[in-house]
Length: 173
Image 1 (tube, helix red, strand yellow):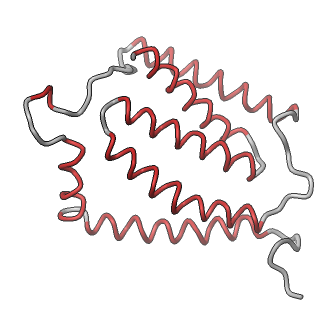
Image 2 (cartoon, rainbow, N blue to C red):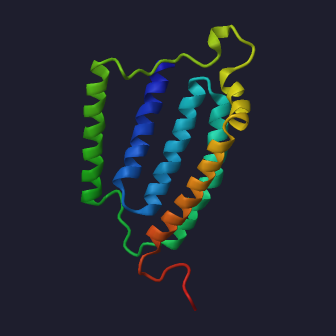
Image 3 (cartoon, rainbow, N blue to C red):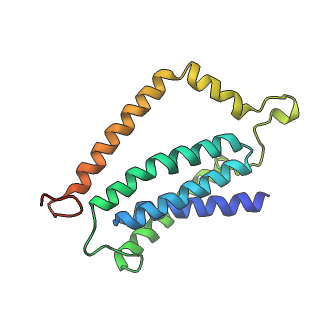
């Protein structure tokens, strides 16, 4: 199981590096979906199955609509692909940065892929990830409102950044 969690961690970092290194919105959104799916798999392996399914439903069900809408508005005529040399250079640079930071952090004992779950070592009948849901709505109502406003602001920022000067999907006829 430890090896499987390690493979999922490498795939997760590869997906995040793919998001950071590619300037095209199509490939960036695809890498982000891949990274979100792998991240949910990592949460399942660590025992947070409820949090994983909530993340999958909320993120891929809600935020992916924003990414699809942004990609539709910003249709690139000459989009950069994975085979372009400077995208590969960015990807390689980010891989080296992640490896460097991994070596630096692993020397201090800060990085670990332990497989301990969230079930309180079998001493509780309520899983710890399920008990956080009631606290989220009880004590986290203000935080939920702030997150909602932040997501709305993010929508407008992404739409403004992808609008550009080119007449694309939505144009006045």
